[in-house]
Image 1 (cartoon, rainbow, N blue to C red):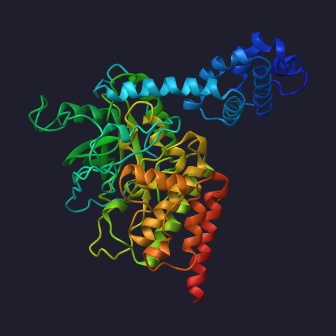
Image 2 (cartoon, one colour; image 1 turned 180 degrees about the vertical axis):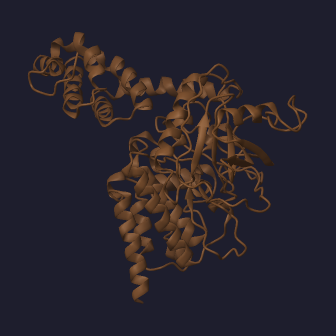
Image 3 (cartoon, rainbow, N blue to C red; image 1 turned 90 degrees about the horizontal axis):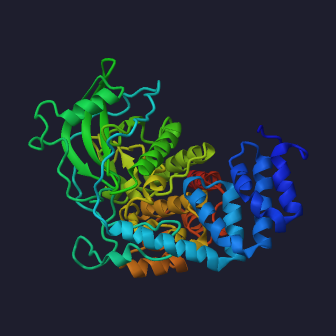
Length: 488
């Protein structure tokens, strides 16, 4: 039946009936839930109001609605679904808590299982190379290997501490759960290198690489250097050729879950599609192509360095980096894309400069991938805990959304201007300090431009309502800091 936003239209018949007689709304619930997918804003909001009215009149429906809507919230965090879940949390907290506890238990069980699986048999789904130039990346020199990293992030629907219960020590053996910054970590098991000689594929023309070339829009792909184990994938430094043009490619073969492969690949494809929508920005890593066969993969422009591997930047360079990242994030949000995992490991650089003091444009990478992997993998390998917003630790601070990106950008600004993370120490100490909002101002750590303390403090407010309303507002204040320096 066609949607009709008018009062008498058929699509509003059920919401109006449920609003007027909520005690009789049980039989209308399946239809009302379906209307949450309507393209018309008025119909969705009408269904939202009606579902809340029905839930308020019949407490026995709370567990059913909590289960159905939390499923939707994971896959499609629309405003209407978030409003209903918030209503249920306020009206029936026990029902929602029970559903969340069950999901936490299932997720803990999943984390204890070995990684593996296969994407075989899945239909490939990918975008094609855009018309933008792919010659922006020059092949850099020798790649540095910073080694494994200790990272943590908290799924936005968890209330326990999954990273802490792993009992894993930091790289230096101290027992701290934080350790070094970085974008590289052993996020999967000790799988053999799929593109290495001696693993059942030919030395000169590996079968897997040939299949990837066939599936991609490149005329040829040649591995230049071995794999780097990163948060989301095994990444190979590769030379790609398309229409006679050579381009440095980071070929990512994504880690696969032990189960739920179909769901994972679908979520990954949706995340990569969102990344592709904003990859034309100068401060976002370009996404050239991706697919699901012979295993989930993506081809991005090659980067050789992350902010985590750099020392403290000069104030003018730090300010330029901060404004550039803010500009990229504004573009993401204007196009409906939330990054969800900004930290120094997800700020990349080409690394192809002769002088380390030369300005390298910062690039957001792994855009939106947290949303795709958070339900399939141990979240302790996705985000440095010292940069994680409070909502990653406790659900009461809200969902992972645009305000989370504001916080993370503020934390990265702290790192840019001081050369240090905003928090440090053992995991429990970091978690407690973040939830309490206790940290030193940047000016107490290093000589920073006047006004940076205020920008970082507001961006990193514990409560979302105290943060910048948008990244655009934060960018404006960063620009004002620069103008004030120019007037000195």
